[in-house]
Image (cartoon, rainbow, N blue to C red; front, top):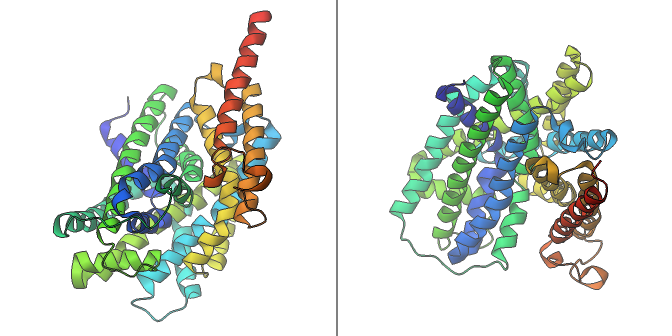
Length: 428
């Protein structure tokens, strides 16, 4: 039986691996634009940035393998392509973005150095942590995460109790769907399948506990980490909405976070926000590079140098891409997210539901339909077509860039109905 101490350490480590650049800079601007509708945008954001990632952790608790196991019921080839795509996206976009955010918020205000210099120093430190991965859970769970949470709670608490509680009007349409789509940019659903693998390997390095004991530990930690993420996100969104009248309507994400920090913490704001941003971004980058290296090592039959070479590649990509500004990386990431995120959500949910509802044929049908109906949203994000008009206008929720949702649900129901009908006719 694993103790409460292990549960808390794993929860803190899981939280820190999730909580990175996007998790920090996205919610305040959502609140800022949603005004009195902050609660609706919070529900949307929490759906894609909390609930789905928690389900991803629950799926890992059940599978206790790697990301490769998420798609095996479709086919081994599909699962390998999907896994490699996820890791390629992870080390090319969200990981470098953490360095970019760190430079803009935590380094640039204090030091006159280039983004290249910041990225080199940043990913050199990431590399040190990745190579020492056996101590990862303890360092993240005991030291870094508590520091992150204390600073966040200070900013949120001071704002809520010190600012006049009055909300302005929403400046965005469809706050719920906007919240869902903005939750994509946290990469947390993708993070769940990556981070979950890191947690599994880390637990296996520390304990020889039974499958059921580890399953219980991962499930409890996942729900607790999800609760912490929800409370922090809701707090940051409320913080942004309460400051709607204090900043220019066209303020950027990073400028808003920095501005709110100055209002709440005065002259010490820059120091605290720099520590917060650096730690939050750093832990996520470590998790992504570690997860990628773990996977490649496992695919190459635990060949040790595979881990080392992948860690080096991940850090080099981080240095090269991390030089671009945050807004540019977020823009570039959108098309990839519009295609891979729906597929990731579907695979997570299919691995959470009971096995009798998720047979290989159900996996194949639902995944195929999800891919097909994600293509219009993908092309729309590239501005190749307008998805709420023409031949795609009839798809429910297509105007909200969620045209894949209902077809995937219908495919799930029909595939199970056909399977059950076949079982009735031929019980053998």
